[in-house]
Length: 506
Image: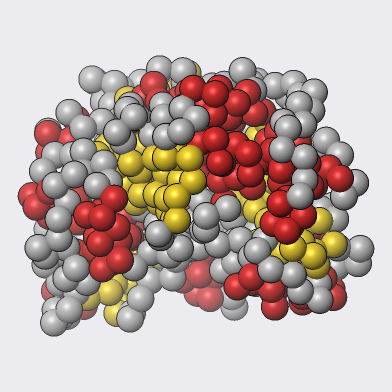
């Protein structure tokens, strides 16, 4: 199956139903499909051809979905640029991918102008307004051919080059194809959520990452995609009530912000059926509060940019059992999963090993990175670099990233284990644990914490708290209080931002 063909099938079946909502504006399935056809025709008329890379510098908006569908139909390869990254990072992405076209939103016209000045040959196209750096693509589309361009496509044709820094700080680009992206949609529908025609998913996170993968599954079921320009707690709850939202997708940081802001108090969430979360570990106190206030309507996915969305799922029924809240669930039905130990064995029950996966939704590979690809694949298995264990019931538990493991005095310490303990302390709202150089132990465990409003605790108190619950070598040698923990553009804790300065002079 092709992702582009999924777009056609949804449009044909649900023509007059509401497909996209943004503020007071609505687009039906027919209108989205018509706009996608016109945008595709406008791009092809400018000389773009199947396989060309097109960079997108856009926030969430009304035209996000039609433009994505246009690229699918035209056989173009999207290269999303995260507006939160630096100009130098954007320049590198454009140069590495060879993208000659940049489609930008009006609010990012200045950034687009800077990129146009620094990247030779880059052609800019505004999405909704013209500028000195490019014409208005929407104006082009208004007079373009409304027929589907019907570009000849195959499942192996690339359609997305998505950069991910993960937590390593090294930008790398995962390539997804028409086939793998169709498999992602099927994977979500089979394992995570089953929307109906009355379903409405609210998108407050950027559509260029995990949130955007839900659009096509909902499209296939005749459901509605409601889009917010940005995440803001009060606006988020207002949108749930206004649009009778049935599902939301949040990273744990966003869920914590909803409760910390006070906006959750008295909010109307009666329409919600499922709250989906993933992308980073969920602090247990946050999940406990959320389930206590909203009920067991939560579902967790574990995946990566390289293998979205669901390598494994902890579904709603699993969330009724508190003993499973630390698990990332069972492997999805399409995924072969194995855990491989340091000596190359398949790990047994309770043993820690690197999680590896084979599945139709796995990326084709990293873009123009032969050496990295060779290190990433193990005889057809994708190496996730995540360490995990499996219990006797088959549930998976992520331990940590291989690169984040601390070896102190010859003992392995997984930062997440220490973080999970610190997060159960009443004063701690956020934390991160990293390795610091140590003349005796080579590496020492150190912790950074953020206190909740009006909360505090001494370093000795926090270290004693951990010592009561973990082995002595896992107790932080020191605890530093911060105003905030550094995070990536998608809300993942950046341990490297804390760890690297500690090792700079080592």
